[in-house]
Image (cartoon, rainbow, N blue to C red; front, side, top):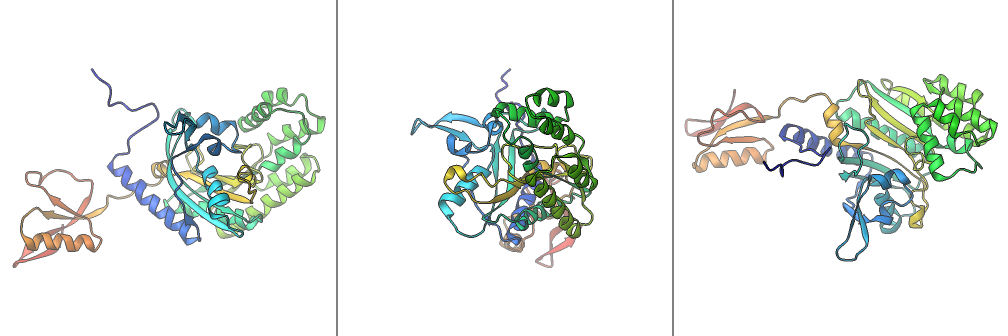
Length: 387
């Protein structure tokens, strides 16, 4: 029997109820970003490979589907992340001197999924601030990310903070190749002490001890104080810890219900981030719903090395973990050729109502919509009546 209808692994259709929720969330998130002054951009799904992968490290390269452009013969890629494209837009198309706030929402495709249960097709929403190096931009991005989860009804949120500068300071001057650095970051993220000890063998004693300390530096507000005692007294580390403390303090004031934690060993996207980074988690969900941080070097390859900070999330994943929503209220109407009936239906739809016309012979079929009213004829006029 033919299985041509089967989809590739970790690719799935989105059926009506979930699709409606995803679309409602997409609109809400874009409106939230607009409320902060972010402008919407729509980069193309495909782009020349060297542009898509510029400054992003090996991880994104492995996730990117690659193919040959039949028109030019050049290798192009299906985007696995939108940030490099937005950096290109900021650098070459907008070319503004001041701050640019840019938001986007569109599909991305991964050749390799993040986990065995993850989808390889995401609807990625993100917001990025270019042109401001101060922590004010980092705070604005975190505020918007928290509002994005709040818009979906997600409660009991954990904000997890870290900073790429800590690892950079510990490895400064170390004669390690890119692959070795990636392995070190992965060992730290896994909290794998044995692997970390083996990988840090060639380093100076102070750096080895600092890396080992990172495995212990996760938890609440006490982490900042412990890090000052256990990590080498280097200016860049001190600045990173100061910045994390400042961000945590201001976030807590504005979002008192959000729990704030620190994990100085979580270096997801180490090759990507250049400063504070964050992840947002919902209670009972082990995977981060949103990730972001500062990546000041993302535009360098495009000839315009501007300060940059942003975050992204998968709208489909957010919709899947958000609280269930009731079926959309609608009006049930009979089908008929009457001009008065058809006019009444059209007027209701123009007013924003959902009107489901019952097609002949299908009067008793279940609908996706929860019809709480019906259109009925009373004394020659079509009026709404509660069900």
